[in-house]
Image (tube, rainbow, N blue to C red; front, side):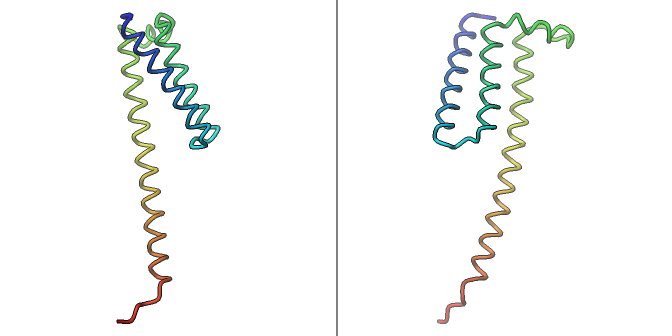
Length: 112
């Protein structure tokens, strides 16, 4: 892998690890979420730092280059996260709609 891509990848992974710890300390992330994100960023850091170790995975899959494999994995992860965000948004939308209905029904009718 080209050295400058590795440097950018290492800086990105370290920044994301720092951001993950920051949000964990502010209690935005639950402990399980923090562990998942640390594993993801540490995996990225390892893959970018030692790309030749991924040859064991990419050869049986017949992927030509490590970078191609990383892009394929990134697409899978991106679409998975997009789907999860969509589901959570729909859940919050329904929850908000239910709350608004309950509040509306509880309020007495105003007389003019």
